[in-house]
Length: 150
Image (tube, rainbow, N blue to C red; front, side):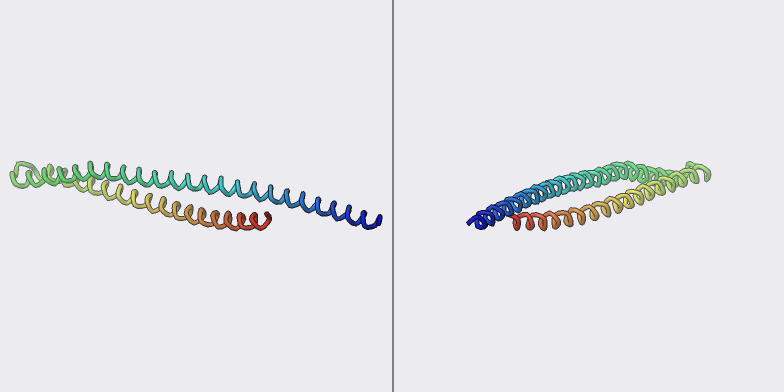
């Protein structure tokens, strides 16, 4: 009879140790799930900030290119008027043509920089998007494991 009580007591101790171990593992998984949620939330915030940056870059380009396009159009018009009236020297015409070329070069350079910046930001956004998806998969796997513990 004593040995039965002793075996029962040992089994109770063993069950209590397993229960405590399971509680510790569940708490660890809960912390891990919380960290996953925080990381995913942070990445989503970064993605939103990046999208805003892309929109601001595009808006800034449109505003700047509108002004440059207007300058180019005005210079072209001025050159045409000067040609039709014939009231300017070759030097003046050359200066206006140079001015026009510089304005077009500046416009092309700004456009190239904007496209390059947009490409870079889009690549970063794509990488971030991939990292978010990976983190969400890890979260689902961890959550599935946690459900197996319960």
